[in-house]
Structure formats: structure tokens, C-alpha cells
Length: 370
Image (cartoon, rainbow, N blue to C red; front, side, top):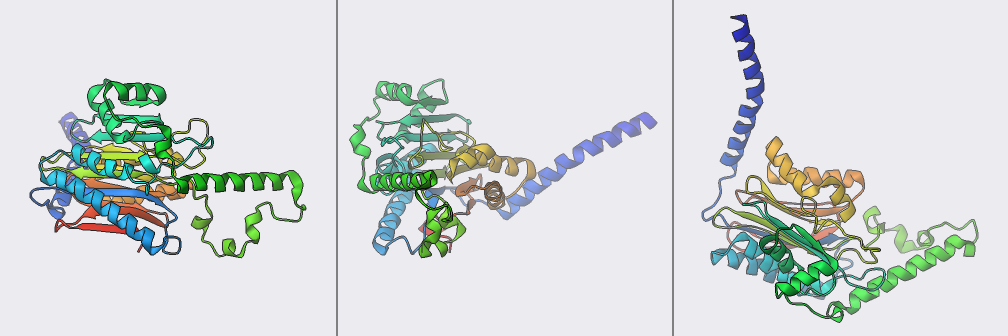
């Protein structure tokens, strides 16, 4: 009899957490009743030091117009009965074709004056994924990432090999000059100049009494926030997440990386689980920010894990993850969507270009924190 009681007690001890978690999920379902049909769509155009002070009204209008175009195009794909993968690819291609964003046409320059593109996509239904990195001639990296997922046995391809596969798949290639934009080139030259000046000063061209960081004497610099003082060259990415009529989630991300990046550097955008993740049981996530930190934390997958193992709502999971990024010393943001179409947007940078379709089916475009 004692043995039977002991076994029963052990079973109760192990099964209680399972029932508690199930009840927690049921509670979320009650609070988060999905609309019918359940369509959801969110995009981002990168996080960074984005404030009204450094964005002219004309440039802001350009960003808002392009973000609205992209989010409406992706949402229309869903309304037309296309898959969440189709919607994600549609919107990201529009942003890749625009010089406004650090992806595709608007990609930033590496230290040696080249443009290197990365991208990834993931299917929440099957957990299939595709990623590419170090591209220099592919017009739309998100399309190649999808081809890797659907038409190869691999998850990631890089560099010349990825571009050889692009040729085989008849995906559009362009000359390197296609990616050249004056604004991105000027950004690289400015950073290279600042690096040279800083190096010269470290060599002793100034007196030992002068501060090592010559910017400290600049009155404008003294009034900047700690975030604004950080290097402005580490941001930039575009992404999209979608929920289609069949309840399937998808996520995609595309980037030109960091201005002045060196020696084959790859950030989080093409890393499944860091910059991109989708699982029908939890959520879809696309990230943007300081990639090194997002890789170390596995940001996108970690958000899904918090929802899966702790039953956190999507916004709470996104906020908790961005806090982890900040605590580690990084910054950036994420867009996330759960299987019911609820949205979570979180970032710790000055701003993040973002847009979504609200409950009335209307586009909402936002840039600043407020």
C-alpha cells in the first residue's frame, strides 16, 4: 500500500507542472481570441538612432510611404489567399529594392568598399529554413534564401557558392555597382576618416593631457544621450512576419550588415534562431540591431522558448528578450507575432522603422519610441 501511495505522489509531483502549463495556455487562448480569418502582418525597416532631430520631414515621409507600400503588399498577398511565406517575401523584396533601407539596393559598405548581403526565411509549419550570407550580386537575397529552403537539401549557403546556386535557380543577379548609393558611400568615408583621426591621436599627435576621445570636447557630443554616443554604423536590417488564413506563421530577415564591417563578418540576420525564427506552436520573429549580441543570445528562438516553456504572451516575451540584449550591452529590436495573430514589438534603440496591419485591416506606420 505504501508503495502505491509513493508512486501516486511521484506521479502527482511530475504531472502538476504539466497541467499548470496547459491551464496557462488555455488562459492565453481565452484572452487572445483570434479573428476570422486569422490574418496578421508586421514588418520592420531597422532599428537605430532615429529621432525627429536627425530625420527631416521629407525623409520621414519617404520612409513612411515605403513602409506602408511594403506592409500593404504583404497583407494583400494574405488576403488573396497566398501563404505567409509569399507575404514575407513580397514585402521584403519591396524594401530590398529601396535605397532607404540597409538591405539589397540600400546596403551599406564594408571596410573594403564592397556590399555584402545576408538573408534568411523560415516556415513555421514545417520548421524548414533557408539562409544566405556574403552575397555581392544577388538583387533580392530573400528570394535566394527561400530557394535554399525549398530547392536544396541545405539550410545555409554563403559567398560564391550561394551565388552559383542563384544562377542555377535563375534568380536575378546584378553588377556590384547596382548597390552603390552616395549616402551609404559617404557614411563609410566618414567612419574611415574618424578611425584615422582617432588612430593618429593615439600615436601621440596630441598632448598627453588631452582626452583620448577627441569628441569629448565637442559641445554637441556632450549633450548626446549614451545611446546616441554609440557607433551609428551597427544598425540596419529589414524583416517581415506573417500569419496566413491556414494558421501558418513565417518570418524573414534581410540586411547589408554593418557599415565598415571587416573580414567576412556575418551578423544575426541569416542565423536561424538569432535574427529569424518561426514555429506555428509559438510565434514568428524577425530581429534588427547589433547582430553580435543577438547571435550570442539566440534572440529569435529564445522568444519562442519563453512562450513555449513559460507560457508568456508574445509582447511580454519580446520585452524580456530585449531586456536581456540591453543587459548584455547590445541594442536593437524585434517584431513578433503569436499563433493567434497577436503582435509583440520591442526595442531599446532610439527608434525602429516598423509597420503592421491593425484589427481593422488598416496599415499603421511608426518610427519613433513615442
